[in-house]
Length: 114
Image: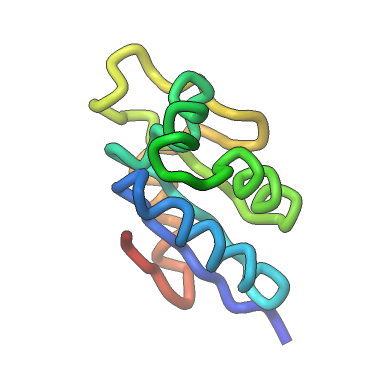
């Protein structure tokens, strides 16, 4: 039986710890992609990650590494307007556009927005 596909859309960085934790728990039985846009994209930016660790009181770096090791695909929006000089992505994450997000989302069994 094929794994169900889940797509998470994260627009607020404050939601990232909960989404990453849930996705990691589900990764054994699901194929998972997480798209980070707007404020959520800060989670994938090396320049902001340490600041967010302090702000959210979570070890986001460890959650992100665990997610990647669990086979979760992480995408940062290439058109993110909140980060004027672009994203400096963490290792293991990719830039993605709206068309790529929609393609993956249309084929998913569920799309969850946070």
